[in-house]
Length: 208
Image 1 (tube, rainbow, N blue to C red):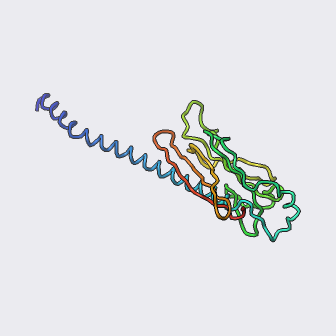
Image 2: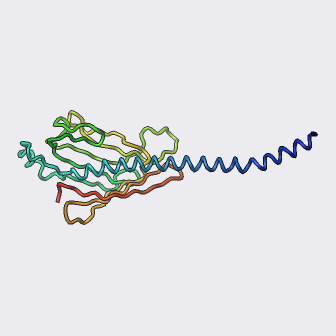
Image 3: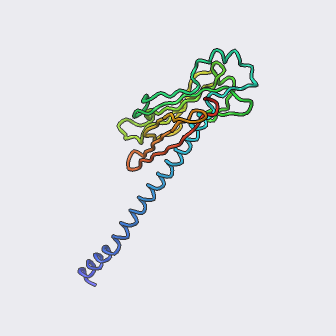
């Protein structure tokens, strides 16, 4: 076999192999994108579940606890407050307050709610979107960070990052026959090609 035959054989091999390499590359890229999309969906579900749980518990009053005097002092305080356009990319923020129940309750980062983690006998839980503080300078970030606000054992507000990849978060009040209903919109992004939107409606159980 001379050099010319070798070159012709090599060229034919490349012609046959090139489409396979291309298809394999496209398949891997789609698989990576699919896995990213699934990861964002799982994060969104977790975030919405935490937010929904907080909304449902807003304004809870423990009838078995001797906090009548405390209720007089907190009667004028909003148990559920939404602040519009004060976060990353104009995202809204949410703050809810409740009394501690007789059972075991958890805040948005998994701490067991106790009297130490209250202020004026009320537990606080908040959600807001901020810029990613840990992102290196000059690096393109994949959205903002969802922050959980809760009280530490000294009753002070503490901020904890729950997840990244948040493009936008909003809370819209809806008319409801019982309680207060809110449409929660959450937009997730990988900072590149994936942009997903999620919507859920949650209704308070303790507020009219």
